[in-house]
Length: 539
Figure 1 (cartoon, helix red, strand yellow):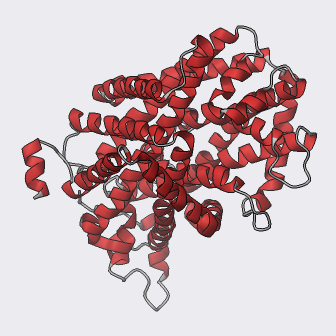
Figure 2 (cartoon, rainbow, N blue to C red):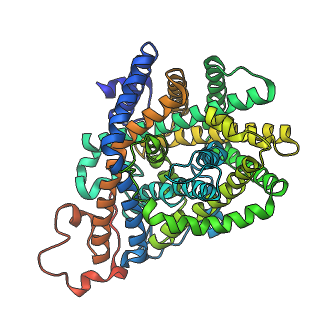
Figure 3 (cartoon, rainbow, N blue to C red):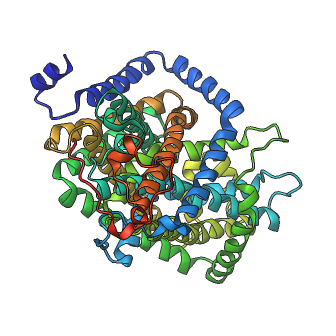
């Protein structure tokens, strides 16, 4: 039936994945529009249950996966390449690092770069810390780096590593379901694999919609701050429509003409804003603070990574850490595929070191410049920044820039950066979702890519009208849970495949249980250099 519908509509898809994903998204919108309060309330209750009963699972899972990746990097498996043994990287280190910076980080940092440090500085989450104190400032930077440093990039790195490994070394399709081939075997090309890909599509769809919603709130605040534009649901829907239209145009133009050019533009504009704040702000204070923040972050990381508020009955972790982890997890399929595409030929050791530490270093610079400058503004009493952040975090960057010369120009530049960041996120995600919902031998149709771009905008508008920031946080915290579970199975599948690979067994031998016989493998089977990965011709 679904195949007949596909032919009638003239689509090129995997019907079970495309129509199931589109159907769930449509059902959500159809229920959320007339019953917005009921839907918002239901997700609020679900998020509360997840936070109370499974918050520890999010915290433990992400920290355990970080340890897993670091372990792979330093282990004997670290020399295995994403590709044949004689393959080499497609890009130089500098080009690769530059592209990593653009992968899923700009949208988040523009919103929280000022808001989070100021929020923790004025309302410390730890007992015995006085608001506005030196300790509060140190803790604020440490928590911000915890939320956007190694743990965030662990969530992106694991699927990126697994996708790159199975696609380039075993010639499997570049889809999330392919990562489970060592566990499911040929069943990844049937309903079991489709179910995995549907979860990946929905996670990406709602994750990007959440980012689009946050960006819209921030844009509305910026326009209100600059031009007095009303802050209302109608204005926000209009902004989403504009951004979605730009994204649809970009995605129709394709990767090279649309996404690439916009990505290059947003990096240049973001670097210009970063340089402006560094030069016009307290430069020496920023430099000193960044050096100290590195030490504070790595000193606190071992205990902070497993901190679950066990002895403190508050809602802080649900609003911050759990929301961030779930949000990042929902982006993992999209960013993971992007990272995999630019990492062919790298060893696992190179991949883990680069993907974890290079973006974390950039995060340190971003928060060092914006976060420390914002804390300095708050300490100086020039602007009641904390008061405005607690009232509406989306206005944070615009209120912060009021303390600088040419604030109107800087704020206008910020508005442009936000539009471009969220446009590139939407059109890139549309390309990835289209890839997840069709076979490799099927062409990518423009109307399919536009459909997914529009779907993101419609979901974002629905979430904003159903409750704004709270609705965005509640929906994503709940929907991130299934993919968090998939990440764990992903790590298991990757480890099984790496063990077989190192010992010289083929993927088919692993799937059919012949990779680890009871007797110890002979020395010949352990020669990694003699291993030639087999081609699995599947779509």
